[in-house]
Image 1 (cartoon, rainbow, N blue to C red):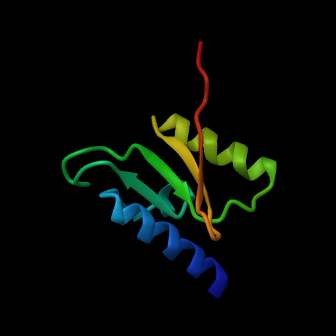
Image 2 (image 1 turned 135 degrees about the vertical axis):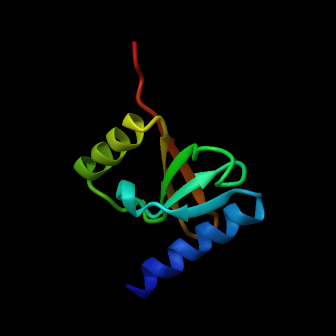
Length: 92
């Protein structure tokens, strides 16, 4: 449990230092919603999970929920170098 909170905080601090505003993503089943502007002025662009350790079914569900709300899903993999992986659905 403490490890998860530590991972969320490290991702949150890095994004906040790059002027990305974060709010709770619990409504979408994720850790955060990421805004590239002020949350009251723009819609969130991404849903974000700070723990990239998930099975394929969970990943597929999060990408699907994010896509249905016109957002991309981002998985943050904390560590010495934080890795962000963006998932978007392809539509024809």
